[in-house]
Image (spheres, each protein chain N blue to C red):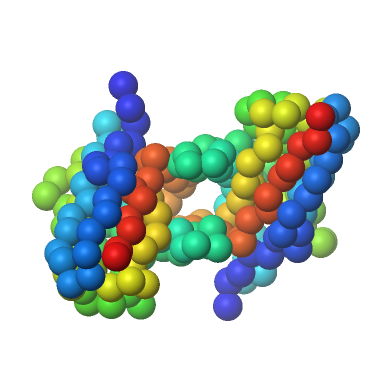
Length: 113
Length: 111
């Protein structure tokens, strides 16, 4: 069955520190991959996406993600976290022509001053 | 110039009532979706319409009925509301099977 796993339920980092959020997927073929962010009481905002090509993708707000086929991973990174980055982060995948988007369970990011 | 909008934003109602949530997108997308986010923040797709045709219908109780009057609108009607229906419901839209853009969510509380 298709699935997306985010191993970390909650991560705490200090402001200015680097960040890496992990995401692994299990799909028959390479899916389309996405990272979304949800601030408290808000909807989901797309940070970045990977369809094909360059395995390092740049997104909004200084985020980037790297697709690694050998590890079935699509980890999200940011070199220096800001307090406003505190939110819930969701990794998601869809199977190309399959319209269905499968989400991971999310990682809650807390940023300490 | 909101891309995907939902009404209402909050909905508090009694068990057994019938309620509707409306969604509209002005992005010109062909495909629209309904997702449910439970109390643990888990997001799961419920339905999807492509050009007013139902293409995804997950194992959702038949008390939930989507309706797409045109490709810019996808409404969700819920009959005989139960406590377990309390959740945040998100509408989304996409150009075919590509990036999905989400609305702000409707927070439903069933008492």
